[in-house]
Each structure stands twice: as structure tokens, then as C-alpha cells.
Image (cartoon, rainbow, N blue to C red):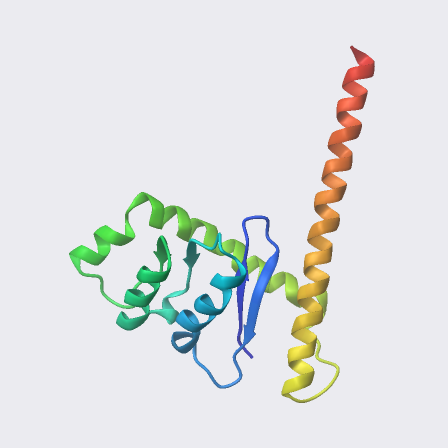
Length: 158
């Protein structure tokens, strides 16, 4: 079952949508519109090719400063130029991080749904996101503590 995620620059999952009947192309604009009031700093998004439609591109261009929505199929010269701009390429280079987040959800419980039904699956997604965000927070705290200890050792050695 496809799950759509919005992740911030610190790899915390901020927003999600379980797509029971929708296709990728149907949710790109709606989920961006849902997330923007909650996260006012949401200025750019990176999408897969499956989210592309002409209407989506136009609407996302209005909503976002940078819309990294690659086009499907053969690219015209104008589209190729747009997709080779530095900001677009940089945003697309960040896209594998989102794929990694989806993989991390599998490691945090989404690989096995213990109950049946749509509601149970949606609950499992939410719990997996919670576990993933808690794991990320723990990583950041551990890293900060290691850095604090390292600085303390350097201070004592000097």
C-alpha cells in the first residue's frame, strides 16, 4: 500500500498520507496544500515521476518556491533546461533521503501488519512514523552528547 511522506531537512517525518485508492498523481497537490498551513517553512518538495501531470506542475509552482517534480517520458528542450537547473538538481539529489525514510519505516514495524484492514494498516503507519522519529531524535541526542564529550576531552588535554 503506498504511503506519501513529507520529511524535513533533519529527517523527521512531518506529514503522511496512506493512499488506499488514490494514485500518486492524485495526491501531490492536496497533501502539499494540507501541509503548508502546518509548516510555513515548506518551500520546496521533491517528487517521483509518478506524481507528474501538467496540472500538478502548474499548481505546485504556485504553492512552492521550488517544485522538483520531474516529467515523465521524453523531455522537450525547455523541460530539460528546467530540470538541469542547479536548484532542481540539488533538490532531486535530496530525494533518495525520502526513499530511505520509507525504508526506515519498514525497519520500525511497517514490514509486518499484525492486524487486518485499512484502519489497522493506517495505525501501523502512524506507529512506525512515531518510532522512526523517536529513533532519529535519539540519534541526534547521542551525537550531541558525543560532541560534548569530545570537546571536554580536548579542553582537558589542552
